[in-house]
Length: 62
Image 1 (cartoon, helix red, strand yellow):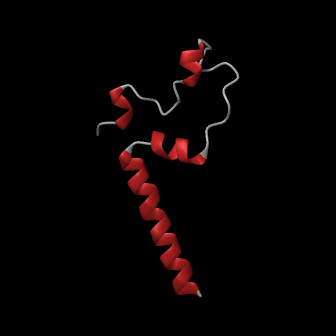
Image 2 (cartoon, rainbow, N blue to C red; image 1 turned 45 degrees about the vertical axis):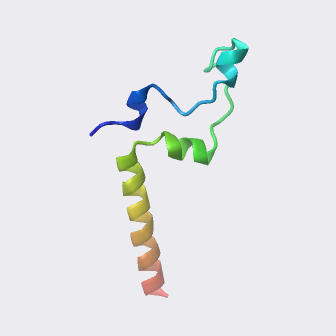
Image 3 (cartoon, rainbow, N blue to C red; image 1 turned 90 degrees about the horizontal axis):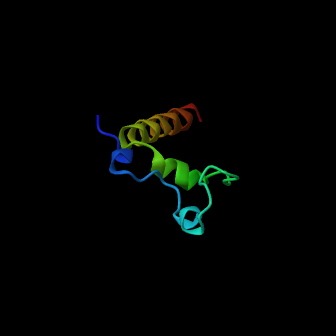
């Protein structure tokens, strides 16, 4: 499986790089959207599928 991160992008903004700061020094916690887009597509599909199955089971239980 090929990771989407293989293209050299790691999901972080270039603002820290442009400012000359180290990207790992005092970096803010990435938002949920940033974390989601940094995931490989296979992991995204797995998480989405498990969420749909969980929602279906909850719906059936009610």
